[in-house]
Length: 125
Image 1 (cartoon, rainbow, N blue to C red):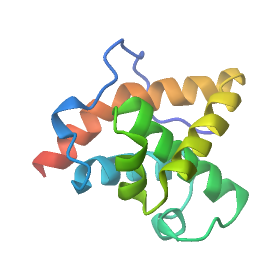
Image 2 (image 1 turned 135 degrees about the horizontal axis):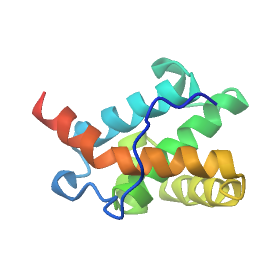
Image 3 (image 1 turned 90 degrees about the vertical axis):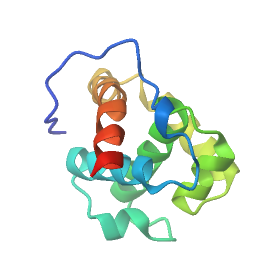
């Protein structure tokens, strides 16, 4: 897994200024970061069907980042990604289980660290 973010994670990982669930900025920023890190296409990430395992994992990471990294509720995260809140809860559980892998955990740490910066930049552009 190639990572392109080389800064240490910080304690502040929330995307607090952008917490309107219908707002596109958090989803766009999260999708873009996940597409770069996991090497999946945006069209694949936004499909209504599960798709390949690699794409499903990337989508689960995106939902995890919206819920855990940005503090959106399960319902709000589901609205952002066109999924049900139970799907988001399942995705978060899957990602938490995978965090036992140190490389995967580091990738998530870096993505969580970058979320406030990326969402702020998406909101101003």
